[in-house]
Length: 353
Image (cartoon, rainbow, N blue to C red; front, side, top):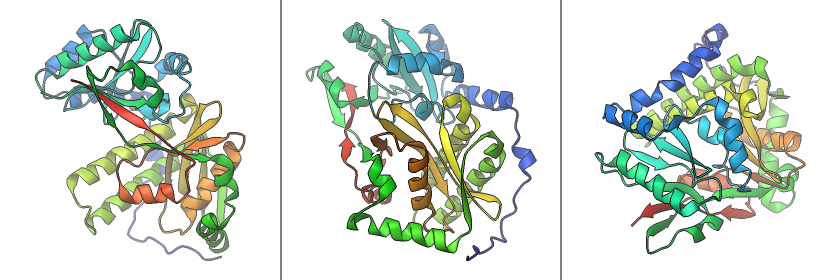
């Protein structure tokens, strides 16, 4: 076996520092609205006026009740995939005409994160949702819209009243293909996995609560290295580093609340230290979703290895695996296409005309 090169420049804090009480984490999440809405205290007041509720972990059961009626295999229609981003966007909800309506507020304005979940009096629900957004966005000039609208929902939007824009699709794969990796098209993946198995004394384990502290350390290390890489490349723009910070915080939120969110997960340890982690869930009766995957770039082949093993250990009974969208990032698009998706599931944004 070949040991990885030591990273002598890194000083790892004690894992005790990361045993933060859950109540403290919740308080940090709950303060996000006041930070986001510094531009105008009236935004928070308007949200209260319209009876909007902050999304909390306890709301998962209600959300799941409504989303099950949609039978959608897009990763956005998951409580976990929304909740973990509460550090960068304030999530608010309201049941309107017996439809679950999820809104997002940033410093720019308000949008809907999903179309109304439910099929009850939907036209009046849409009108009320856009009315709320127009009122909240009135002073900022932010254009109200609904995000992540799936294709079967489009018939509810009259093109004379709404503008429909296609967004980035979700990459959906046949799960058996991700596990077996057979054929010439997956030869490079097999070679990378074989290299990893040959050169590193690695252990693949199911993720459980005892791994939380060390997993958080690993995410902080991942963030530092990504920011360092961006400083040495063409990606030294502040907005890129800002997005890395929020991506890391979302991953940490998923780790901390993995049990409550119903997430399955796996880790890879080398020399007793977590060097890779992945978390995912079932989002439909036949579809899994990989929510996060973070690995140490020092170990060649680790991303391919953990992806294959995680699908095999937790999702082998499911037909499809959804790996999410590429956010318009070319490198991410190439990486997702290299696994040969069986479907690019379309998603749309809806604006009022």
